[in-house]
Amino acid sequence: MTHRPIWAVNRKGDALADGITNANERAAVKAQGLGQVELALVGHIHNFTSLDFGPGRPGELVVGTGGDIQDPSDLPPPAVAKVVIDGMTADVFTMGRFGYFVFDRQGKGDDWAGVFHDLTDAVIAKCALRGGRLGCVGV
Image 1 (cartoon, rainbow, N blue to C red):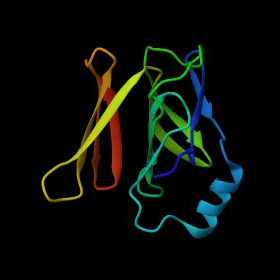
Image 2: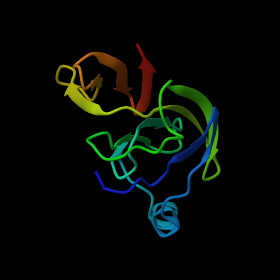
Image 3: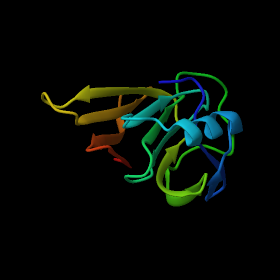
C-alpha cells in the first residue's frame, strides 16, 4: 500500500496511455522487484483504476475517489482497454466517480472480492483478486 501509484494511466477522451507518475519509484521496483506482492493498493490520482499485468508484475488498484475536484477529462463512462505501461501490457478498467471501495477476503485463501459504491451507495464496479490476477468490471 502506498499513496502514489507505481503505474497509472492518463485518459484523454476515449484514449488511455501510460501515465508516468513517479519515474524513481518505477526504477526502484524494476531494480528490487516486489517479491511476493500480488497487489499494489494506491491512491493519489482522483479516479478508480485497476491494472492487471499478468504473471510478470503485480496488479495495481487506484482508489482515489474519496473527494476532491475530479479532472474533467476523467469522468464516466468507464473505459476498458489494453495499455502498454512501463513496457508491459495491462488490462485496464478506469472511471472517474466519487465513492468508496470495499475489499473482502474470500474464505481462508488469498482470493479477494471488491465492490465500488458511488455516493448513492449503488454498486458501480466489482473486482476480484485471484491467484495474483486482478480484474474489475462495471455493473
